Length: 259
Ligand SMILES: Nc1ncnc2c1ncn2[C@@H]1O[C@H](COP(=O)(O)OP(=O)(O)O)[C@@H](O)[C@H]1O
Ligand SMILES: [Mg+2]
Image (tube, rainbow, N blue to C red; front, side, top):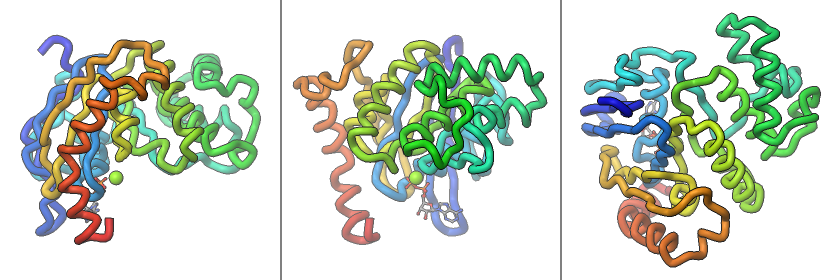
């Protein structure tokens, strides 16, 4: 068991008669960056929500550090596609929401969170309001907020999906840099395969409904990684392989379910 951070075993989920996840079993090592890819509607968000404790499963277990997950908790940090920053709060006070809710002493939390804002590239923007920030900067605040509670695992659901492609690539490199510094365990959902390969140690390919784990692909690319790695034959081969695994599923969901 040593080294396993998150252990998911035989996880089932249905919404009424709709079976969404079927017998998902996966172990994630401490400090690994794991991405989940798969066609729209295959249960990626549902999976993440169950790990977060926001959704109940219908069978199987989720263990974090050997303890069963049954409800939300400060040992898991969340970043969603759409930032949910409070518009009336400044950057720093948005980032401090987690520690505040946890009842942590203000001074300590503030000092640490200022460091985190620097880490995510927002040094000097502490007193800005969300409306004064670009989309990329708002997602950086979200990331700092998730890190501010010092979670055991970071859960990210298509966090860059709303960003333009250049900002998105910058955020990918920034995220690898931040991850290299702290080596948190990360579970990252994306539908962009090159993003998954670029960021990850393993890419989990989910098959369409009911969502099953089709394959776990180990990404043996050296770190640290720069964007230029996306042009190497090794990188392209990973993307091609993963794409071939989900192509049929994606085609089916586009043709039959409107994407
Ligand atoms: N709260 C819910 N009630 C009923 N059906 C849901 C609910 N949440 C998700 N679903 C359905 O479960 C399936 C998987 O959804 P989701 O996990 O969001 O997929 P993904 O994130 O991979 O696109 C979809 O068919 C979706 O409509
Ligand atoms: Mg989703």
